[in-house]
Structures are given as C-alpha cells and as structure tokens.
Length: 16
Image (cartoon, rainbow, N blue to C red; front, side):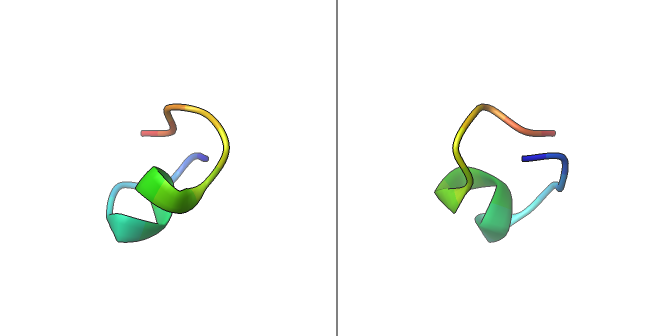
C-alpha cells in the first residue's frame, strides 16, 4: 500500500 495508517497494514506489501 502507499498510505500511512491502519489501511497500509492491511494492504498487501509494506506501504508507506
């Protein structure tokens, strides 16, 4: 994911 927050954790990938 590309968002900082709870969503990023649920998204596939690290995301920031």
